[in-house]
Length: 520
Image (cartoon, rainbow, N blue to C red; front, top):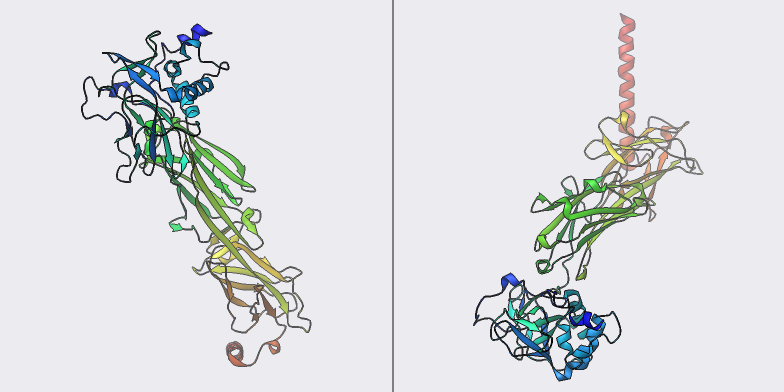
């Protein structure tokens, strides 16, 4: 076990240090770089503070390597963190490295180094920082910036944002302004595979930008507005891949879209995933879905790595049909939320929400008991002149040109007639057949408006057979058995006399025609 640990790092290409990766060897200079800082952060993040803590020094630099020696005050902390990172056994630091645990850390592979950085950052309290570090301004964001340190050495660099700790890094500075020397464990073993490149890429992210969403029916934006049951809604989710994704070897990126009940989301094979208006290679992602319109549907678009899309906006497009499951009583709503999940956590929500409304009225007679009337039949016409048709099973609404193809709604034993799941708009209700025993000549036609906020307004008909609703928004619509039961005063009375005059005039024409026929 001891020999295995002693030579564990000979083949390790540990150029990835900690939670933040060192630059690739191909980016190293071949000679002196007089303007290169000892330590710098690539793609610095606005508002972040990078604080350096030197836990090892360098010595005996020659043409190819430097020795690493543990800072005395850090020996216990480095030993503890190394034990945790190399967790094969307890007290795993070999005896040869007892007085120089940082040299043992130099034999770690990339995964062990990352773990070591995380464990070392748990030191509480951390000693005084070795250098001023860097607090990134908005102007510096996304650029390479120097991190002020206290001379050459091996540093733990912490990353804090708004008082919260992010992923730390273990970073070796340049040596003598060179960035191509390699760390050796110590003079005795000559081990080590870590290059003193003096830079690291920031991987901690500022809070993720929530995705944006749109919802349209045709060309009409219905986010925050109303829809009909049966409408097909076109949804988009736009999610920005952080520019820092380019700094990772692998950058998992997941868009989670959650639709409420009442939306029948399209099959996954119909989803379009695009960047800059072009389809993304399907090999980069997978679309998975659970749930249904009855309980709600969750769809995930998962990229094993979105590194190649760093800084780009992924646009996901799909459709959803509003179903009767959205309804609670006459009204209802459907909403759709989306989040992004990355190494940096989960973003806030992008959301769309649409409402659907309805109205109802009660059919009554004008007898003394104002009894509910069953059997009255109605059709509904929209402002554009088209009639409403409703599918019996799905309750989805559609429009037809001809009244003969419109759905006929019939009052039940309680006299109620209900229209559920409608978008805001103006509607005309036309009685096509009065109940048996009631006058067919005085069937009711009246207008109803549904506002975007759901307020229902009934408009009085010409003969005042509609009684406007109180707070319960249920109007009453009368049927009469004879003309004498209609109101005879005011505008209704004037209208009534006009109707009677037209009826009499019509009768006169009929008599005249028949008389002429007899004369011939």
